[in-house]
Length: 297
Image (cartoon, rainbow, N blue to C red):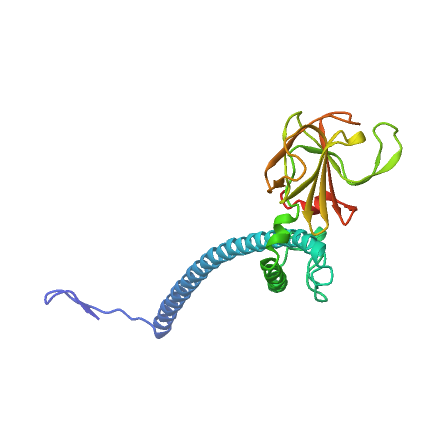
């Protein structure tokens, strides 16, 4: 029933209950759909935000993982260099005291720990390596570092009592150039026959300085057959060095020399095919590979 005003006639409208129910149901249905859509929208928005956060965290973790790999590789490379240096130092200790437990090369590895230097196992990391393998790699690095620390501590204790030996042991290049003939078997440049070579030949410009590789006393300075002008230095402890084909000799027998002191100049005297230095190291009269007595790169 609708009454417009007090003068207007009364109008009546009849609405069935079924229509009211249908309208009410439709309104509730629309409200439910709207509510469901709203909930779905907020869920999708929340998932998108979480996915964005996860992507950012994943990118951060990848960056950190790459940094960890690079640091492990750097540490491994450093340990490889330390081990090579350790081997050279132990080569020196072998000369004076072969009865000590300081033989050539590093201390003995424990089973399953480390690998030979040639394999450079610590420098073989790749971007495809599983992150799960990193803890094991770090454990091996830690074990290797501990082993190297122990080895270097032994060497330090030994060297503290061997200052005189160190000063007398050849350890530097006598001259800089390029090695044209190494220690061992080689083809004779004159006869083309395979013969033993008791030292190494270092090619260098004529007149380039030749320095004493360690402290010692000059025991010979003069001509010696095919070696031309020769200097022989006695370093004590059974160690002697020989320098051949010199153009000029700056010391005489009986002179004391120090490591790094100039003793001669590179030349081409004697049986020689060009300017170079013939360099020998002998221990108790037995020729040794001079490379064992060069700690410089």
